Length: 114
Length: 111
Image (cartoon, rainbow over all chains, first blue to last red; front, side):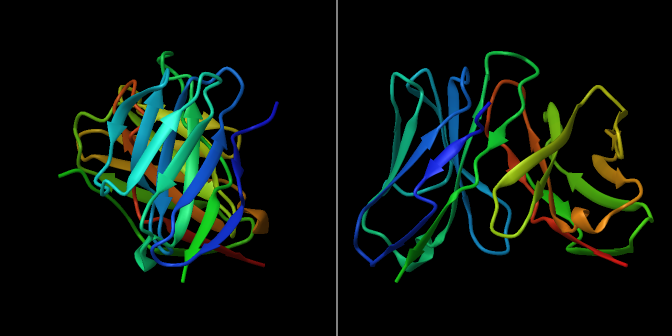
């Protein structure tokens, strides 16, 4: 079975631009979460979506937004990019409605803002 | 607030056991996780433990949880060079995907 897939794998943008990152969860998983991992740090929670509804939001500015589609795939959007947005963006999925359902991560999208 | 702490670096000889430690602060955490990250890759789930358990063993991996001291450890038996990576401890409540991660422990295995 395919794991969590993310696209693109790498991206270079300029300050002020907008970016859209995409994620497909593991088949059967209805919950998708997004994390930001800055170099040398652990991942930080950005959003969780379950059944197309936002279930949680981390401490990120309104420039960050996300959505989940009927097929449970998800997009993360970041507007007005800053240099500090350069990071590895990780998508994760889980069954969520099942008690013993750990979080599985994709390989991430590495975003560089110049 | 919620916080997870790990030592930054661990170096072991191939064939020895590795023990990576983690402390957390959120007493309401239900699940505690260990993830592995190799260079340029995402996070690979290694194992996880429910907070009402003391120990979990899975092949070469042993997780010990001391809930009173909020201390979690991961023991890797017969450490191999392929185990060289960054290991993240994470905590999270039941039925949510909002995990709190530590800063990671870089494990270096030398021959």
